[in-house]
Image (cartoon, rainbow, N blue to C red; front, side, top):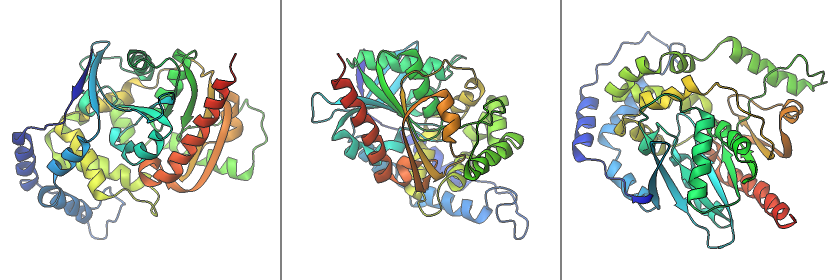
Amino acid sequence: MIEPFRIDVPQADLDDLDERLARTRWPNEVADAGWDYGFPLARLKELAEHWRTGYDWRAHEAALNGLPHFTTEIDGQRIHFVHVRSSKPDALALVLTHGWPGSFLEFLDVIEPLSRDFHLVIPSLPGYGFSGPTHERGWDVVRIARAWARLMHRLGYRRYGAQGGDFGAAVSTALGAVAPDRVVGVHVNYLPTRPDPDADLELSASDEARLDRVRHLMANRPPYQALQAATPQTIGYALTDSPVGQLAWIAERFAQWTDPRTPVGDERMLTDVSLYWLTATAASSARLHHDAPRQTAPCPVPVGVAVFAHDITLSVRPLAERLYDIRHWSEFARGGHFAAMEVPELFAEDVRAFFLARTEDERRRP
């Protein structure tokens, strides 16, 4: 059963947030610390003060309720999603999947341009936001992909495309693997390519530089990732009890993963942080880092890749082509990990180009 959903956070939860922010116990900071020890104190105080005194959740809530929200239950888990139908009745449907520490909010600025040509289904990952929390182990990317296949079937879509970044990319390629007869193609804006000593490929100097960056990350696993992969429940206690802790945990990722020329605005970021806080999903969202590393089946459907210059890692095409049927590859000089929020016009046009080509392929099918 699919039911309409309206966002309506209890006022008591907003009052509690205000009181907790006002009672924040701040740590000290060494002189001239900059980013050497983590998120700078002055900047975090600025964000927290704006969250408490300048940010208006109700205004953002009202704007979000202008979208068509729904919930349904799949595999024992509530799934929240936004469903926007194109004015073109025969349009291809796309399922757009966010990652961590994002949410369905990542796609707000691309709904209008993409819905000109496509029906859009934008779910919240299990354990995230209004699809959370989860209550049992095992919600890895393959299980999520199977849930998305059931969701699209429930909505009546026989053939559709999948798009995602971060965990959304992993879910989208897994969806292509579990439902290849349904998925016309997968477009991703994050596709890690690890060094492969057995590949026997001659790579360009720029590709080797990209792999050096990957090697560095593999040798120096980011602290947030190590904690969420190993002990998501432990870090969840701190993040669920302290709004400033949740703010710092997410704001650091936005600060470090975006192109300095295309930052995500404080209002949008605070709405994302508020979504995690008000749904108490810090721990359940972190569990995906614990469960996600399981191997997935190869993705047999056509794949499109958009590489944004300031992403965490940059894909190496010769290595990607060993694993995927690459039909489309774009390189952008602007944008970072949150491309749909940072450079929505570039993101939307690349997604449109890939899936319109897939639509033409569909029309030529016997």
